[in-house]
Amino acid sequence: MSAKHNLFGTHSDWLSHTLDNADAPLPEIKTLLTDGTRISRKAVGVLDIVPPAGRSNPNAEAIIVSAGVHGNETAPIEVLNGLVSELIEGDWELACPVLLILGNPPAMVAGERFMEVNLNRLFDGAHGRSEYKGLAEAERAQELEEACRQFAMANPQALSHYDLHTAIRPSHRERFALYPFVEGRRAPLDQCDFLLEAEVETLLLQHKAGTTFSSFSSSLLKAESFTVELGKVRPFGQNNLGRFSGIRDALRRRFRGLSAPYRKPPFDHLTVFEVVHEILNTGKNFRFHIPDDVANFTEYQPGTVIWEDDETSYRVGHSPEAIVFPNPEVPIGHRVGLIIRPRTGSDENFI
Ligand SMILES: O=C(O)CCC(=O)N[C@@H](CCC(=O)O)C(=O)O
Ligand SMILES: [Zn+2]
Image 1 (cartoon, rainbow, N blue to C red):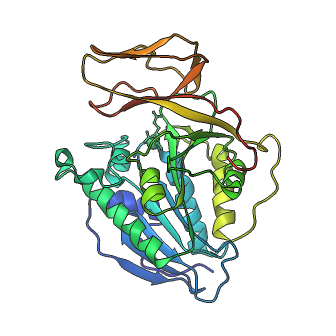
Image 2 (cartoon, rainbow, N blue to C red):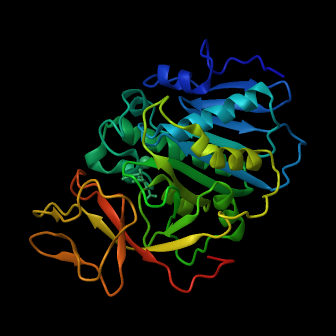
């Protein structure tokens, strides 16, 4: 079934339509696929897709998947675009409502992480702060929050959100997920199974709520949300998509409402770390003592000074700690990196 539809104008697919209309305030447009699946393009890069009434949703769920919240993290964008093309071509049938998002189209066109301000620091209402007034990324954060809210209200099933990224630095662990902090929350077994199915074998437990997209959906929409890091930042067309087949196949399986496959080695258990410290650029003569290009999960021994400023410093505690996302080139108040250590006493079945 090759569906005739008007979603992408003259463009061959969702991604080329999004890139070509990156700055356009397009009105909502709806279409019906030949199998009765309804697709609404809510805004540029935002597709709300609902299976036909009466089709069973065996996992009783609704799913939000976002990519391109950072414009230069292109592989997950290509993965999501491929899944949309498959669905529209009728290669498989959708079982559950999905909201698919390409987060920052102007930054995708520019091949940049962001244009004026990091979109992934503007959620959970942070877009309303006076310093972000009038910035396109603040408006986009608000638009995405609203699209997610409407989707969650229209679909009261169990909600999951996967915000797909790739990392700036190399990494000793190629794929890892971050689980936003919500008081008392523990990652359910079926979410751990999904991460392993996607070949994500490492989980980082955040220690406090933040203003990322996954933190917003987790705390405000009560979704099971994860930021998922799937490899390294590369420009469009330069990704080895073979390295992203895990997430592609796992998402397709979920979209089709199939049950999870059994865990298979080497992806049969998650290694869990907890965030123990968030490094912020304090602006008070802030000095970062980690080289710029160090790989994620590089370990530091007890006593190592990680950063200092004119008032305070951070030193590794009694056991080794590792760095994730080292990046001192951020504005004052923004995250320079996360300090993590292996979680002790984790329960294999219920993290
Ligand atoms: O590689 C890097 O330094 C950044 C990769 C990235 O964009 N990571 C996300 C993580 C969001 C979270 O903490 O959930 C980000 O920094 O926004
Ligand atoms: Zn990112």
